[in-house]
Length: 334
Image (cartoon, rainbow, N blue to C red; front, side):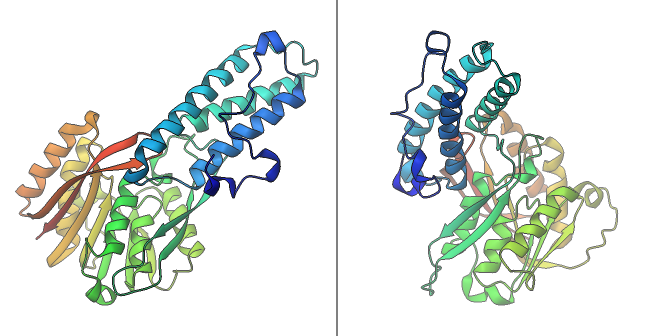
């Protein structure tokens, strides 16, 4: 385990998964206390990896090698544990506890936050002209309910990184810029914009529970004075329903928001509704092999709505679920 990963793990469990002895379930029949100790190792390891993501492509080979090894070894052993009746553990409540904890460990190993919400620390180098790095705290809620809006995805990290480096938007005008984030999720991109100096940021999403989590993250980073949150239904806007929000924005940002065919039609109309003349839409999406049609339709719909593609860049990045992932970055002008 890396030194930086050990910081969250109590001294008693500083054992790497590589050196951890995993007893043969049926042959060795490990007792309740032994199983609890092993499960604690897995719990700390996977929770720590989630709280401290390694999402830099320079670390990709190390990330893949370590994660793949740990996941394979953990899931294989945990699956055998769950399949066993554990008849040598005579207290039923102890058997149930072991099985429940093992199942949660498998969920975490497979990319789901099984232990409930976690607070992640995100850090970016100091923006040009500043000597102060950007740091944020983001609450990622459980994914066991399959609600993707509660999860920070790799596209959000990459777009936030472009914002802090000045590659996405001109930092010399950031204080007077009005920024709208659509499909904000956990709010990482919009909150990053506030941290680099934007004084007017509006974070929007459709799901009320997602918006509640975003509001929590705004308060967590003490950005209530510059960041607001509102519900925005893309479908209503696309269908001509007059939205409560009437403001126009200099800049609109979005990350990993093109994952349904309907989005390819709705999003261009939303951008047209809310972006000022001469404004810019910054977008980062993953190029998943299962969503090539959506990407093609989206690009076509943006062109049909009269947007000019100023810049496009394909790059690699990482996230918790897919490891190395190809991404596409866009800058559109109206």
